[in-house]
Length: 84
Ligand code: SF4
Image (cartoon, rainbow, N blue to C red; front, side):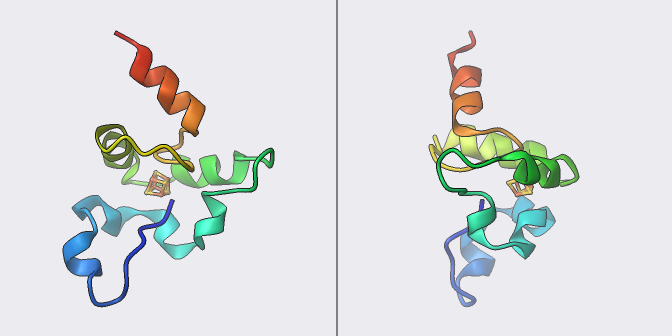
């Protein structure tokens, strides 16, 4: 995923873990692929990201519905939410 921020508000708007985010160096299209296309590359990047756990926690807390967060797709996060 990618934060929708401008250069001027990044420091205040982005969560602290975003400094660790590998995806900050990629374009947003990487984490919001066309429907039906592979998420494999995005997930691989997440697998090497130090901010992964915080990123996933953030996505679950904020009920992010679209794109790959913390290495999980929308449906995988949804399945995680349903767990007791
Ligand atoms: S875990 Fe993935 S989506 Fe989250 S910050 Fe890291 S690279 Fe980006």
